[in-house]
Amino acid sequence: MDKVCKDFVFANYDGTVSADRFMKERISFIELAFREKEEELTKINQNLAKELFNARQKDKFIKNSGFRLPGNREDGVKAYNKLLNSNFDASVDEINERLRRAGYKLNYHNGFIQIADDELVEEQIEKEFWSITKDPLWKNVDIDMKESIDRRDSNGRDPSFYAARALESTIKIISDQKEWTHRGEKGAHNYIDNLGSKKNGEFINSWEKDALKFFFTFVRNPFGHGAGSEEMPQLTPQQTNWAIETCMSWIKNLINRM
Image (cartoon, rainbow, N blue to C red; front, side, top):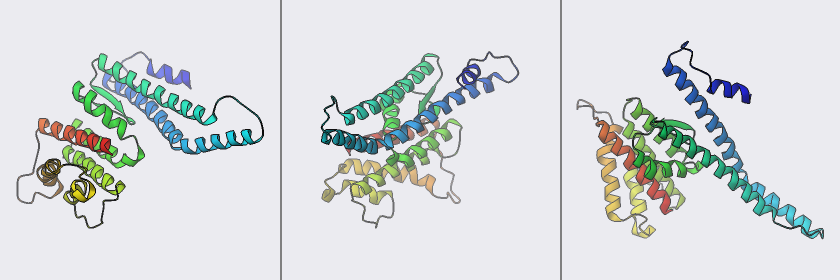
């Protein structure tokens, strides 16, 4: 199987298909390989607590039996898990660096290769954003943001709406996790109030609360309702990029406060 995969990826272009298809098939293959490995690693990470418990039990059994062995099984399990994750992260960094140096504006994150136009934004915002949203807790945030980027890159409808959905999900999850949700909320503004409430310790300041509400009122809401007889709302490509980057930045910032 290794040889089959290697021969496919390194095959010489013979002109039987378009060059565009030839390259996309190989990029897709690499994307699938990384995704499969990442899914495998996710399952290992989810099972880590059980593995640590088993390690403690084995050490306890050996200790009670009178044997003395150097080292600690639990520390060994932690070290091995850390090595698996760091090796994969290094592979992701390498493929992204190779794409960058080759002049391809592409970036792998959380199972997908997508377009990355701005190196500074990718380095300072997107890289940490995708790292944070790997956690299953932020699954819906990850899905909506990927949908937003796909729609932007394919000139699809309302990419900013899905970026705003990702931000709204983040706010709701934080409210739920902090046990501030009272079930009387009717929309994003009420959840923002939960985060900015003095009773809840002002997780966000009043000016941040106002800024978030402004974003949902004037950027998200026009795309969340039918336009009726009015002109269909539409953002310019520059405004769309700003909306996506703003949502990513807010999400990263809010999660890091938890």
